[in-house]
Length: 95
Image (cartoon, rainbow, N blue to C red; front, top):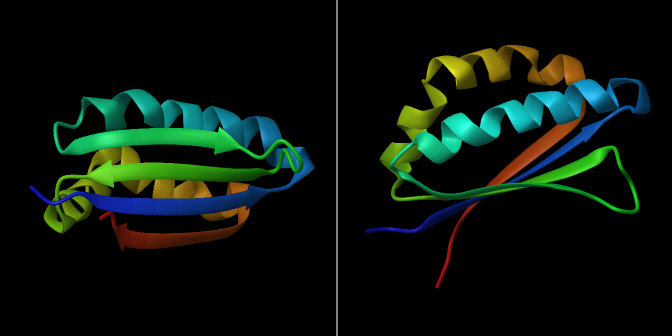
């Protein structure tokens, strides 16, 4: 089994902060329920509360592709750009 790591960084605005937190928290249960998800953590920067980092671990690249097609992730993708002013993602291998 592969261990594919995804690191996502998201930045919101102070006026969108509560919406951003609610949206990210809403992802936790359905992602944890995915058998191909090995880990999913949402973290908030203590120096800049508008900055979030998501740490994800997946069993394969295919699992990541399938995950992105799920209804709740399609909905997340639709609203993400209205709540977060910047976002970036890195897919890395862990040794």
